[in-house]
Image (tube, rainbow, N blue to C red; front, side, top):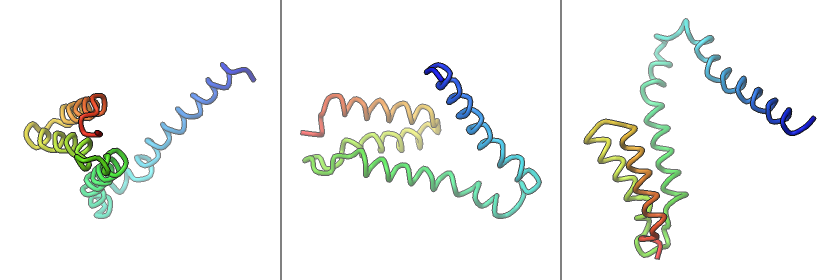
Length: 112
């Protein structure tokens, strides 16, 4: 099998697997959309996942040994939080936070 065939087969398998992981919950849970457990999960799981992602970001991305003690990750996080509370626009918050984080990383302001 040459590289092109291998890559196309890989893309096809990845596409089917991704599609199935998106479709299967809707197929199996369509009759239970008003179940209290699903309503509870739908209400609290997104916030829990976001909190976990923020925690992982702060633990993995911040330079806690620098004199600024993690400001390279805390400042972009605060930009995202404050901008989202002000404008209620997730895309704007994510783009602005990413831009601030990348600007800090590229200029090495807080990593001296």
